[in-house]
Amino acid sequence: MATEGVYPKITEDIGYASEINAIHTHVIGDGSDHADVAKVTGTLYWTCTGTNFHAQSPDTEAVTYLQGKFTADTALTAFAPVSLPHGAVVTAFVGYGSAGTSNETITLMRWNTSAGSYNTVLAQVNFGTIDTSISSATIDNNNYSYSIFTSRLTATDIIYGAKITYTL
View (spheres, one colour):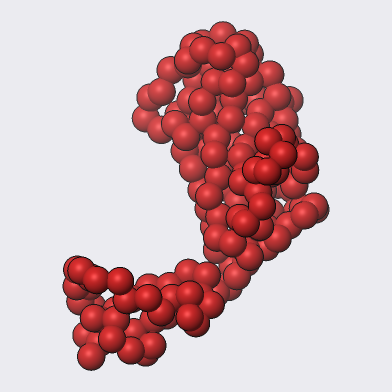
């Protein structure tokens, strides 16, 4: 029996999330019946702070992480992993950074896990610009993984974060 507002520790595999084909589920109660599962739908957001980014080239951590921000200490490119639910449809993408990043691009890409290569640009814009013309917008976690990449940042450029808007 479900209890509103109470989130008990589940100590056994309840095993029905895949049975109802839910992308996002939230269990309220003991998980003994399907009424305890709520499917999340609508417009949702994935966000990250600058501290999610890592230096890519040169392969060094010549960066400063402070108060959620990524500051390049030297010229470099950066990346951040992205985790979105399977079947989500990306509708917008934007990167946020200091004034120095406004001429730099930020790109949402997918990685073909079986081929070991990035093969599709989903979105690419300058920092501070929202891209709503997303290619290959449906997330396919069965065959791909996703990351954000930057063009070459200059020393003192700061990444504040990124936001992906998607629907379920």
